[in-house]
Image (cartoon, rainbow, N blue to C red):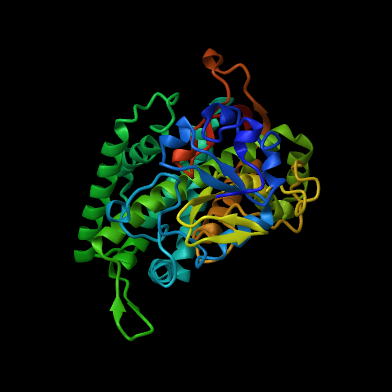
Length: 425
């Protein structure tokens, strides 16, 4: 497991939640781009997740290399550093490699026909309008819970076909699963298993209903989707695969976009010249969305496992050990992004890796997520003026980050963002 340096030599433990209490510590961890690979030794924090240390890669070119080579760096053990046997977690799109993973991607893609995507766009715009409408009659709100998290949750619910009256419990369970990993969230960890079980049971019941009485939604298409493989055999998603896809869609599909919207608005408020530039020239919204996503980098890391002894840029890596690709650090790599710590809504090119470094695991929902961010920011900026952070929020409880630590790859995000505003009538 020899590498050119170890994280221990600089006195940091990447599992320490205090590192992330004020957001991702980009500058403090910039040294991780100085070497192609670092070794993170076993610490008490790591030991809570797994029995060995792990490799860390943070350079843009190296995370792309690891991401794009499933033969050397397998996803078989999942995307989190926690070791969960496949027989317990089930085989899914996130813990398999081609050709098995390719089957998942092709089946899931069958649900998103051009007509369905167009309908989702229309529903998305409707939700954005209603969410901003709800801000009327006051001049401040808690942006995460009242705005940022609502659009992605409703979009996922629209995809799955969850009736509006049943969404509150589903949304609460999704949030509880993620918040329970953060000791300061106020959500006891004991709630995790119960929330996960309720979501799985809901997915199972929904699939059963749609199998007998399909409706005009994506989930009905997925339940009935069939794919002819190269060998002529026909395959479909079984019940366990559908249950797991529901979990993945609910958590990864909502949390990442929520964080991008919230962190993106915070960045615009903190860079008023960029906010005014975007207001003055709405044609910049396309590049602005990519810059928001680069800036937010809402996925903390993903894990791959070294399939067999290999090397990266001359650094030997031992087989069966995990490699953690830190996307936020790659998205501040000065080798790729000129002035990477500058928020620039017109940045082009913008070769960020917030959706992955390419290869078979590039985010299947990347286009949907970008569309959600664009729709929400467009609606906000067209109707809301005098945006500011609300330092005088009730009880003095200001900006707060949710920090599940390295137990959850899709974890670090804003938990609370009080803002002030004026809404145009």
